[in-house]
Image (cartoon, rainbow, N blue to C red; front, side, top):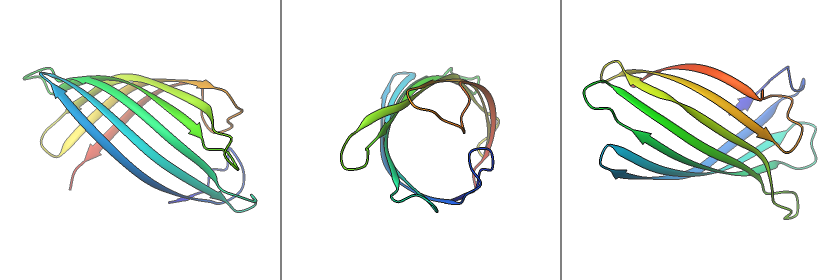
Length: 135
């Protein structure tokens, strides 16, 4: 992934992800866990920034409506340069997915960030709408 976000800095960044996820259905509820390793190389930085991102999600499928409300918490654990791991940010979100048909869906969510370090890219509060299409 090549990133260029002018708001944060006028520099290029390269990022890669490696992740694993698991899902455990409990009736109409679903509990899922995702672990993601994220490494970002900035063009002017001496070393990459590495995160271990842990996300726990609870969702509920409302039958015959296409609605799936959810809530999740995600920890952004900076692995630190030379092993000083710490949590930089916590992302809390709640919202709902809505399945339009087999290929298309919408998502509406509210997001709240708790910052432990300065973050020039993300806002503390966010409301989002996402459209997804499966090929």
